[in-house]
Every structure is written in structure tokens, then in C-alpha cells.
Image (cartoon, rainbow, N blue to C red; front, side, top):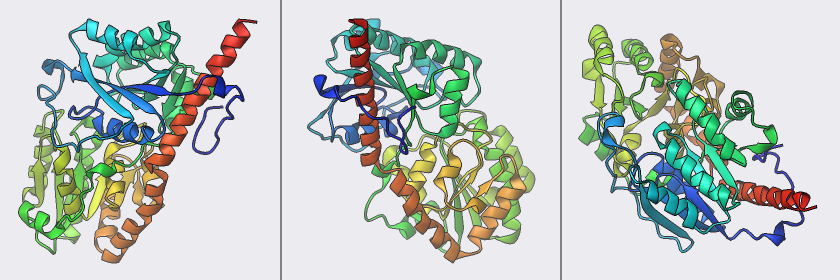
Length: 411
């Protein structure tokens, strides 16, 4: 069976015959955006155990395919200093020679590809194929088993790309089932390893009241945060309708929506206008730089993730855990794993249920404190050192299987 945090597959006693020295990781790395927050944390944690050659991009997307224009770099990410982590920013989306160079010349025992974005498929296929030609195993962490918008093209392309994979890592039990049912990958080739908390966003010495004041929030107001890219599946309309109900009983409630638009804001503005809640909704409809993320979570009393559908684990949710923020989530994907109280898990697309959960939390400050305290248990399960050890065990397992298959083939 697959390796996961509850059941580690034993490694072959011959594993010492091929010592794991260096891992190549393919993905996006700061100052790029994309999946860089996750890659930043996992690469640093793995570098405590093994040498990591991170293959990143100099130019990751053509601007015309990315919502809102080009994907600009974010210089506010913290710096990376680790003696066993080397980051190479050479890939460009328009130059196949950079893909071949990294695939053929990177010295590593295996490739660990972070897969999440359809426009990168050809680049990933080229680099993965080059590693396979060199008889180097390929491990995929599949962040989106199915696309958030349920694209059939994404599923088809992923199915082709996964033919190059020796082993797969996913973040939720639902993802593991999808890998076996949608892509017909044997269960023993899929491991469940959680998405760690994004602790680098937390900044010591943050003055919460000063931040709230600068944002225009009074000390008595209760701030509900909806954070992250504005996309159809995120449930923004549900949140707005629920908030309108909350305001009737808690006039001091405020809704803070922060994230880059991936769609038209017009339908949401119509909801705001219909319920006449504009004065109580504060909007920051743009990308929030890494160095500014802490301001929004510091200002919040409660974080909501009202997603309509979702299969994986949430970077926003992992960030909320890092800040020990109380959360209300919908019962989709891995979101329920981020809270300890079933009363904080509501059905998707149910404004009344979401409103009631928000009301109960905001009316009782002691309950909010208790909710914050219980996130310590969740945070312990999302700590990066054990996640890195589980990932390292996958590497050993894959290399041991490669050795066993070589012995079998050679008689």
C-alpha cells in the first residue's frame, strides 16, 4: 500500500546499495508566485535531510493566459539560506532548450515534480521524460488531482503525464481515491502526506490593533476574513449572502475580502448592492504580496472557507492554521481536517448554515479563543519536519523498488 502518515511501508534491506544523496524538485520557487509558498516550505524542510536541487522558472507563464495579466514576481518572500538547498531559476516557458538542459544535466537520484498547472504540462513532460531516459525515478506531488473548474482537458493531460510517474503523493484521502479511480493508478503507488502549514507568513511583533486601525476597523468590530484568489468555486456569493444574515444580529460584524480576481466582480457587487451591505464589506481585490499576508490574518477574528467544491487541501486554510485563527469550512475535500469541532463544518452552498455558524462564533469571544487554542492540535499534524521525513521515506521506497526491479530484470 502507499506510504502515508499512518502506515509506512517497510523499505527493502538493500536500500543501502543506492544511497539517497540528492533530490531534484521541479516547481515554482520565490520570488515567483504560483505554488511557491508550498515549494518554499517543503524544499527547506527536505534540505535538513538531503541535498535538494530545486528546478524553478525564470519565466513561468505567458501573460495572456494568466488571469489579470502576467504573473509578476513577489519580492516580499523571505530569503532562502540553506547549505543543502540550491535553487536554479533557468526554465522559461518559451525555450525548450532550458527544459532539456535541466532534465538531462541535473544531477540527482530522482525527480520530485510538484504538479498543479495545465500550461506547464509540456515542460513537465519534457523534464520528467529526460529523467526517465536516464533511469531516474519520478515522484509527483499532485496538488490538484482534478482541476478546480473540472476541466476535462486537465484530466486528460494529467493522465498522460502520470504515465511518467513512479510514485504519487497527495494531500487528502479523497485525492488518493481519485488517483486510483480517475487515473487507474495502483493504491500502493499513492501516498498520503498532508499539506503543511505556511508558517513563514507569521511575523513576530505584529501589532494587531494598529493593523486593524489602519484598515479602518474599530476595536469593537468583529472581522470575518475571506482570503485568496476570487474564483467560482470559492463560494464568495455564499459568503456574502451569509454575511448579510449575520449583520442583522451582529451589526458590528465586518467582512474582509482579499484576493486577486480570476473572474468578474460584477455578480458579487450586485449581491452587495441588493442587501445594502457595502459599508460593512471591505475589499482588496488584488494579489496580496507574501510580506503583507500577515496583516489580513492579524486583522481577522474569524476565517471562512465557504468553498462550493474542492478536492485537495487549502493553502489559505494552512495559513490560517499557522496564525492559529478560528475557521469555519464547508464539508468538501480536505477542509474538514483543518478544524476540530464538527459544528464548524457546514454544507457547501448553504448561506443559512454558514450564517448561523458565523453568528454563534462571533457572539461568544470565549468560544473564539477556544477555537484558536484547538488549532494547536491541527498545527502539530501539519508540521514540516515530520512531513519531510514522510516524503524522504517515499524517496527511499521508490529507490528500493527500482533496485528490486533491476535485480529481477537482470535475473
